[in-house]
Amino acid sequence: EDQVTQSPEALRLQEGESSSLNCSYTVSGLRGLFWYRQDPGKGPEFLFTLYSAGEEKEKERLKATLTKKESFLHITAPKPEDSATYLCAVHPFNFGNEKLTFGTGTRLTIIP
Amino acid sequence: DAGVTQSPTHLIKTRGQQVTLRCSPKSGHDTVSWYQQALGQGPQFIFQYYEEEERQRGNFPDRFSGHQFPNYSSELNVNALLLGDSALYLCASRYRDYEQYFGPGTRLTVT
Image (cartoon, rainbow over all chains, first blue to last red; front, side, top):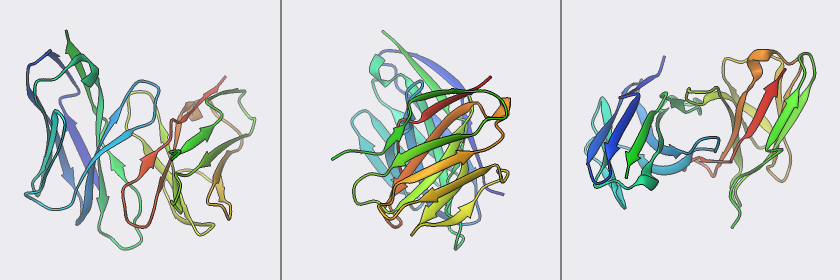
């Protein structure tokens, strides 16, 4: 059974204080790992897809990295508008398995 | 280019009733998945539709059913509603093996 564990559950940072969110996963072969941002009451907004260990992707203040067991979402000099829940999901490599398995998310709050 | 759209935005139903939720995929996308998200949890996969057929189903009872139309839009039907069905229902679309994009969701409240 595919599993995704995100930590911490919640994180409060001062504006400008950099940090990292963790996503640990167990999957029988990884087709892709996804990061989404979700605002309260809204649908998840796609951020990144990572496919293989060692891969990195960046977008504004966010940088996602991938190893064989976990992924990190690094946030540099965050602003209050970066406050949201960040979700990690894995897409396994099994033929015919199309579902994404999500973690429960990290709720990030940036204090001005 | 419109993204994934869902209707209605909010819905309040009574236990035992039936509900239909609708989804229009992002332009160019042919695959639609439905997810249920309870408060404070990650989305849980319900099923996926491709070429008007259910391709895969998650651990949800038969009360949950769906349909995909020739224009790739989709419906999610839930019969005999339970209080535990209260959640945010999300539709996601993609083209082939590319990223899934989610809609804004439908908030269903069962009383």
